[in-house]
Structure formats: structure tokens, C-alpha cells
Length: 246
Image (cartoon, rainbow, N blue to C red):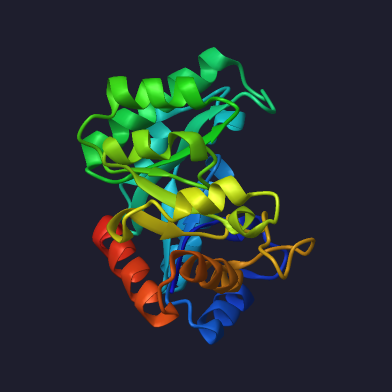
């Protein structure tokens, strides 16, 4: 199994302990995702220190103010960077203006195209604007909708050819609509993530998440889809490998 979206720099245990615990659980690949300049440096450091770790380089919409496109491009050119993002729109926290978010989002779309790397999307309370900008600007790109939260629009997203990534919240009892959406995603478009240290899945809900926790979400999804776990794990690993090239 792999964890296609985590934030090692935000987790409390040292990265070496997180990676070791993940390996013991059977997690063989980890994509640690940057959200600002400091975490870009941390993500690349982790990727260079641990062969099973790779980096996604980006600027989170909540950190979009003061976005430096040139600096981000320098980080993203590192061969251990396999994706751009996370980027997108966040109208829940609104830590940056919509204008700043759009500017950072648009530039990262361009960067993903320039470097031919997948684009990792964050969207919270901004479904229409997120999908609208992707349709306008991201044609032909490999787009990952991380921590998928638009169950009512899953068919639209699949029609666009995008990848759908599910985090631990899909296991929550009140997320029945999200779990139902997960049954609709073809195996070659489905990813599993932790978004650690956030969104710990049942049965670890309420405790900080970490990459090893991706197994709980994966087993839940395998059960919901009616697929034997080894078959599900193999499909998710092949999907992520084809997407990220690891």
C-alpha cells in the first residue's frame, strides 16, 4: 500500500519514526505534500533522506498571500518532486483572499504543465470555483482531487479524467455519501491517502494520524467495494505508480 498524500512536517514523531512505522505496516511509498516555502524545503529533505518518500511541491490556498512563483519552480524542479500542489481554493478558512488563491492556483496549474507533473488539488467549500478553473485551465493535465469532498459531483470529476483520492473521513459513520461515491470510482482512478496528521480513520479517530494509518482507510474501501483486500491494494499501488511514476 502507499500513502499518496501526507504532511510529514506536521506530524509530531520524527520523520524517520513515521517512515519506519509505515514500512512495518506495509506502506512502501509515501508522498509528503508541501503547503508553503518552509514545508517545500522539509518535503524535499525527507524525500532525499528516505528512498520510499517523495515530495509534492506547492502552495496551499490558505498560504497563497505573498506567493513566489519563481521560488516554487526552483523547488519543483528537484527530481524527488513528483507532483505540484497542493493548491486550489479554500473558502472555509479564507486565510488568503480569493484573488490571491486564484493567482497561486493558476500559476501552479501552469507549473504542472511546464514540468509535466500531476497537479494535487485542495478544495473546501469551493466546489464550483475549483472545478471551473480546472476545466478552464487544466485540460490535459493529470489532476488529483485530494481528500475528495464532492460526492454529489463524482461523476463529473470522473468524466474529466481526474483521479479521486480518499482520506480517513470516508470511514466516518456520517460520511455515507462519500463512501457511496468511492464505490463509483474506477480502480485506475482511485487513490488512498492519510492527509496526516489530520483525518484519522476509524478506529483511530480522535488521535493524530500518520502514514501507517492508510491501511485502515484502504481496508474500509476494499470492503465497501466488495473487493478482496490484496486485489484492492494491488490496484491502488498500480494506479499511484502509473500516476506519479515512482
